[in-house]
Structures are given as structure tokens and as C-alpha cells.
Length: 343
View 1 (cartoon, rainbow, N blue to C red):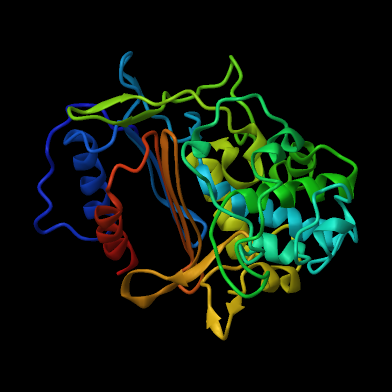
View 2: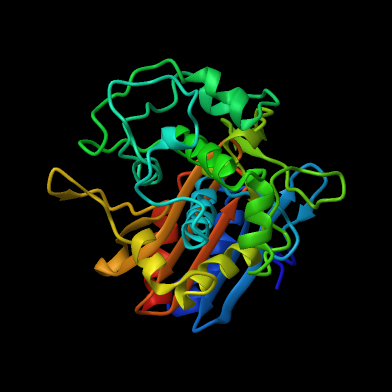
């Protein structure tokens, strides 16, 4: 089902469940709250809803195809990296609590040591973006990008604080690359993406890819987003994918594919700092959503992208939304339709 034929505002009164969700999503596109959205919702491994809403390309009026249109997935990339991290642990290439310096010996020494687990859980004390660092447009390798932040001090003693950021995952991916003696993106492709059938999930835009255009909000509608190069932060926010592929990722987590149960337990266990939960595991948000229901996954927000991956284990539900615009302020509406789907 592809949205676009005879678009109009959909009445929501009297609608429930997936019918309400579909109408709400159509309205978000019709009211121009998003340029385009790719949505896949699975229940018990079967598609409740898979559709495109609005446009992958506003200028050319190219509709969104949930199986083909590539969106930036932003921080959902961290979930992919989490699985790759777990696979490396299972293969004995590294261990959760190894020092980062065991693998990257020439990184500037800090006041405290920090571990791979602390990087993956945002408890290592690495700083967050400053200024416009979130929108770099340099063809950096992972190693090149260290120049941006490597000489800065830790902002807290590792394990004693929590600060969400993507530089943690730049460092984690570098350690993983060193440990495997293999380019990070190639390891992820061979050990995670291909085994899960995620053939549309890619590290870079290529000419033959059906890549959506990326936008930011403007006073009237949307304008093209800044040009950025996210390859250096692939692990934390650089991948492109379809909602169909990301639903495969969510279903794999639900069914414990690819990794052992003990490995998933490590990835999906919220870390504690000073006796309090961070509501974050290793690459996964681990928290509660609508109606207090527990879920794992990630929200993502980056230049030209806003994304949701929510996996509800008890309900066996996978919810994926990819938007080709920086934060369009629609999370309240998404939560409302998710309430209906979870009824």
C-alpha cells in the first residue's frame, strides 16, 4: 500500500487499531507535517501495516516506497552496532569490559580509563556535539574524525555519569575495527546485515540507490537539508535503510536471532549509574512507552531524518517510522497511534 492516491484529510472518529494508525499517518502527510514517511508495523512477525506516506522527493513528487526508499536512520544505527558488538564478543574478538586503550593504543590518555561497555552505554564520559559538529560535511574516516574531540577531557569519571552522544560510538567502532582487523562497515555487513536479510541497509549513498531527499522544516513547509557526510559516525548515526529492513532488525531482536540469549541480555539490560537506571543498554534504549509498556529500540534525530524503532517484547510488536526531515515534532501523534496499535 503506497499513499498518494486521492489524498485528503482522514476523519479519525470511530477508528481504532491499525485503521486509526493508517488514517493518522495519512493526515500527517496531508497536513504537511512531514515531507515523507516510511512505516512498517509487525505483529507476531506479520505485517499489520507497511506503507509510504507523502514523498521521498517533494520536488519531483516521488512517492515513498517502504521497501525501496532509503532514509537516514540516524541513531537506530546504534542498534545495528550493538548487534555487531555482541557478535564480536561471541567470536572472542573482544570483551564487554575491555579497556578501549587495549585496541586503540595511540588515543590520547585521559585522567581515567574507560571500557567498551561504557562507550556503548554512554557512561564513558565522552563529550557530546558542540556547535555545528552534528552537521559535518567532511569525508572523514573514523580515524580522521578523532581530531574533532580526541584532545578534550572526559566530562565525568567513567561509570559515574550518563551523557548520550554519538562520539562514544565513533570510538567503539574504531575499537571494533582494530579488534577484527576488518573495516567496520564490512564486518557489520557480513555478520549482521546479510544474515538478517537487510540488503537495503547501506553505509553510503550510491547512484543506483533509491535515496530519499532530505529536508528540514521551514516557515512554510520544508527546505532541503544541509549537505552532510555521516560516514565517520556510521556506528552511531550514519546508516541509510528502509522501514522494511529496520523491521527485520526489530524482529531479529524480538526472536533473538543472530546472537545468543546471554548476549541479548547484556545488550538489552539498562545500565545503572549511582544506583539509578539510565534506561539505556548497549546501543539500545531500554525503557517504557505508552501505557507503561516496556520496549527496546531507539529514537533517532539527525540532519534530514527523524526515526523510531520500538520493539515491544510482550506484545510481539515491531514499530518502525522513518521520516525524511529533521525533527518534525510529530512524536506525540506517533505515540497516539501507537496506543491504538497496542490496544
